[in-house]
Image (cartoon, rainbow, N blue to C red; front, side, top):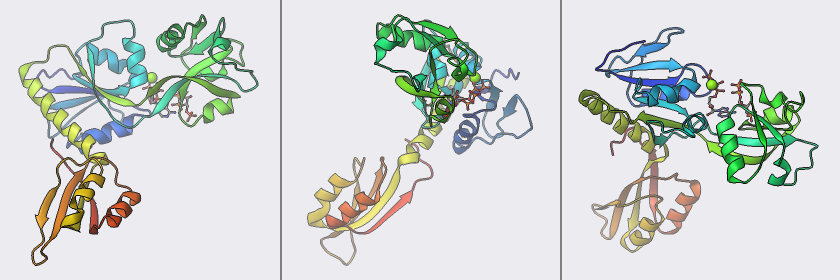
Length: 295
Ligand SMILES: Nc1ncnc2c1ncn2[C@@H]1O[C@H](COP(=O)(O)OP(=O)(O)OP(=O)(O)O)[C@@H](O)[C@H]1O
Ligand SMILES: O=P(O)(O)OC[C@H]1O[C@H](OP(=O)(O)OP(=O)(O)O)[C@H](O)[C@@H]1O
Ligand SMILES: [Mg+2]
């Protein structure tokens, strides 16, 4: 592993559901990642950082130990790791991908009567800490059977009556004759940093990279909107613009009483929004994507 003390180390999943989007996020933040096949690390050509490609389960450990200053991992994996210990980790941002939920599921034919049906039962999971916390919080006395994978098979193998596993479409549960009955955790990929001391030089790098990543995240939903409007419609139009704090209002040359309104909308702009703006007196409405933003 690279141990250059003046470079940041960023842990991302080597190969799996989070790999491509994690890499993409860093590339959008301007990092040019050296390519190579099947490598466990990669140098960033234009920024003092190296990427570590690891199993997602190892990312919280690497970041908490300060081996990597940053990491991208599912909240599910992170919380399973931090539960019951004082880990040196801080979540900096939710990244909007890798969305799934940790759910308790029952066999389709089981007459589930709510949480009380779990009392005294066995629940198979790869997330024993999160499952136990959920049961405890709900005052349920059930035993948790830890598995390393293929959890959905547990009821058929009579290892447990219920499972607690990740679900997104629900296809895997359905294919195994199971249906979700309780939600333990809603999850998505998060950016985490170590709270272990970071050297002065690296702090500068870390801050610069975080600003860029925040910029990338902010531009995702944001749009730049331009429109024209008569003076008497400006107050109403400013109200309608989604997530706008202070629009720029410019008088239109040769058209007294008419103005151009320019604004960064921090929320999605839907067709319905444009229709409402038009109804309020706006014309010539343009919505354009924002490529970069430094907040
Ligand atoms: N069905 C799903 N839909 C969306 N996101 C998911 C889904 N399943 C898992 N995830 C998210 O993606 C993360 C990685 O999932 P993946 O299946 O690639 O992990 P893994 O098999 O444990 O990989 P690794 O080899 O790195 O240990 C999960 O921890 C979770 O946050
Ligand atoms: O609700 P669904 O859309 O069917 O997704 C759920 C499945 O996805 C995940 O597994 P994955 O496919 O990543 O395989 P793995 O557990 O072997 O990594 C998870 O462990 C479930 O088995
Ligand atoms: Mg894993």
